[in-house]
Amino acid sequence: MKSFTISAPASSANLGAGFDAVALALELRMTARVAAVAPGASPLWTYHGPHAPTHDGLRDCVEAGIARIAPSPPPLAVALDNAIPLGSGLGSSAAAYALGVAIGARLLDDPPADHALARAVAELEGHPDNALAAWYGGAIVAALGAEGLTFARFAPPGVAAVVVVPEIALPTAQARALMPESYALADVVYNLQRAALLGVALAADRLDLLGAAMRDRLHQPYRAAVIPGLEEMLELVDPALVGIALSGAGPSVLALVREQPERVGGRIAAIFTRHGVRSSVLTPALAFTGLTVAVSEQAGGAASRPGNVGR
Image 1: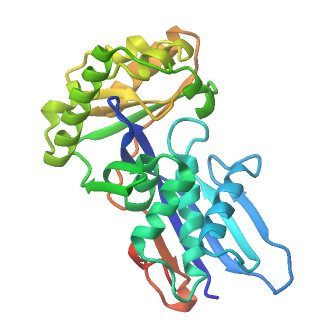
Image 2: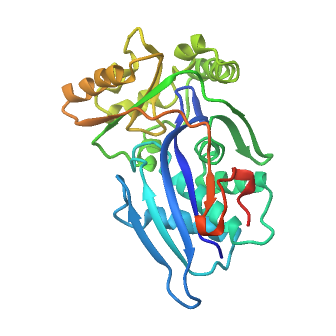
């Protein structure tokens, strides 16, 4: 087997009203360098990068993705290099599942079609928005259910992104448990209107719609109870600000801006500071490209798109 390097981007899901349906890919990447080891040897995993995992949770996601596509994989040496903050609402598990599915596809002589691979990532992750942003990059609007996987991908909007990552823990399961089992009709209608606007804004690059479209009443008000200062952040007014929302299940906050992302990020971080929470400001580019694969130089290969993950 030729050694290869594969990467997938981070993602920020929901964008306010697009709960479990909309995501943007971000240029913070999880990368795996993969090589074969001797038959009968044990797999070899090493962790690297600014957010190297301290346990095998990401490995479990990658291996689940591999097993979904190649149920009897050979032993592999995997060097996992991670630049995606963990447990921060930035799609690290989606990136890991995407890596695993793509690795599994490269182990087969006749891998499944691209759409089937993308659906496998979505089903493993459970959230098609994060999953497809990791797989395809760009802006994703997606639905997953009995009718299968349906989605549209658009180029990222013409804005800059800033992500403020607080030093608090909010596991996705805990964040979901904060949400009610039922909603008032007025709140559902409120979100439906803005989710429709959000899809149009991304499809047509209508930045003027994003501020209203990223408002939400279904999940952010309930998660604000455990994210100090979130309510104040969501009401932030700044001439550079296009839209602001909780990133995924949180606790990170995503702002889309016309300019000066560091300054806007500083204003958000200052709110966390006033509430006694330390945070870091990231200014990743929006990711036009999702999954990438490159074979080793010794093999003479070049980078490939998600639809060419097979051997």
